[in-house]
Image (cartoon, rainbow, N blue to C red; front, side, top):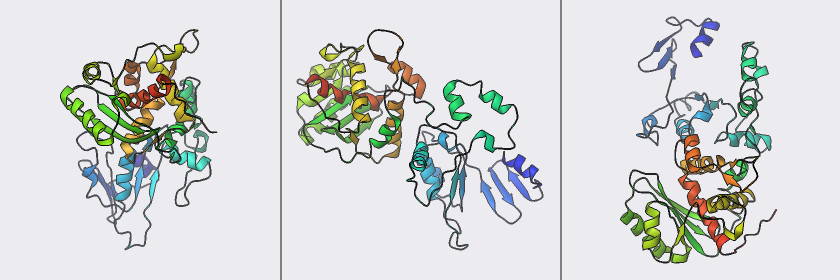
Length: 366
């Protein structure tokens, strides 16, 4: 910790520095300060407005993989204090363990030798620390295989198991696949929810390009119907190209709005293929299309991107050692893993119905 390092270096509290536990500020004799900040993304402050007036000369973020990318970006934008006065360049240092979220991109660019010249990535492993406890390595060796690879060996590909459906790098690239053309028919894929339930997510497609994702936290059946109708009319989307999750309120809407497609998650797989249900079949198809770069999601919203990646990354094959129909983790199991319903993933998944149900084929070019 900071205080143990100060002690090791002979920097004495009360003499060379003082610490205000109420304001979480460390102040040194020369007037320099270290501001200790909580970067958790609280629901009451999703945009980190509390940091808006912050002025700092540099920043260090510990366990960066545990915060959101937006938090990092906001802190980075606050590095401005006395830079011109002392002719300083804004610098940020971050530390983290391997993780499959926004920090992975730094590792990937370093691995592929495409990291920008103004950034540096330093891979450090347990053995590089001469001060580590002799018992710590032994404790790490007792962890489960994925945690052991991540924490002991510093392996960023720690969870690339056979049960993964989506390639992680393909998920990152789904927002960069600008070579995918927005052509062909338009579609609306709707994962709907009533007030107090999960999020309502409506995804608007042109061909295999996601043009827009509309999200609402709370919605009534009437409001959902009005919204779907207005989007369809605005963009000239045929009723036959509107698909609605038929569970709950979606069942009412799909029957009331004549001509739309009702998506029943537990219905039999199409074409007699060996899947537990149509939802599983569509998730396999979505993984196939994303993994070969056939999908482009047009979104610059950092939080939305990270949510989509997280929801699809946790989709796993289930009961792989058993003979029988192919299956994936249930929505309940995924909720337990990520703490919310995979509404964005489900909305994207339903688009695959039109590739399967109408015999359409999207060619994958290597």
